[in-house]
Amino acid sequence: MALSDKEQRLLEQLEAALAAEDPKLASTLRGTTARTLHRRRAAIAGLGFVVGLAALIGGMQLSIIVSVIGFVIMLVATVVALSSWRVVESESQRTPDADAAFTERLDERWRRDEF
Image 1 (cartoon, rainbow, N blue to C red):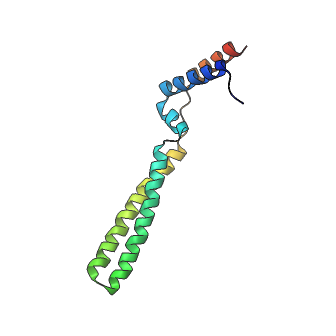
Image 2 (cartoon, helix red, strand yellow; image 1 turned 30 degrees about the vertical axis):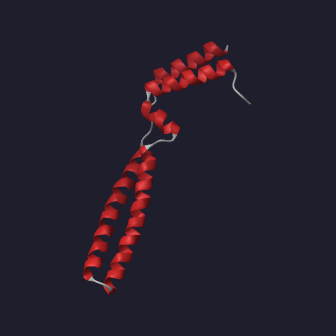
Image 3 (cartoon, rainbow, N blue to C red; image 1 turned 90 degrees about the horizontal axis):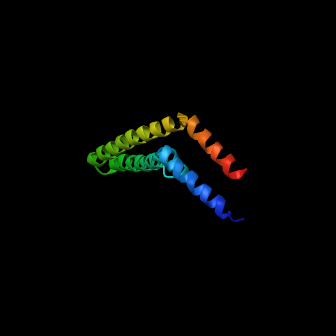
């Protein structure tokens, strides 16, 4: 079911007010978060760890240099994964700052336009 013109205008006003009041929350609601970036970075680091492990084991057959390079790759991947995971965990533990005045204004605007 489509929104009426009045509802569409109200929704656009709410989106604009939200973006002006709390840009971080607005970007979170749009789905573009630092959390997503850090999760992706942690996943890539996990893949890098596996590649480093393969180089470490394969280097035992080929050359010690390959093993050392594999170990360094594993070390860097671990540091990146842990730092990214720490950011993701700290983001998930934060509670969004709720501005009571902002919420009250939205409630008042809703009541005024609706009734």
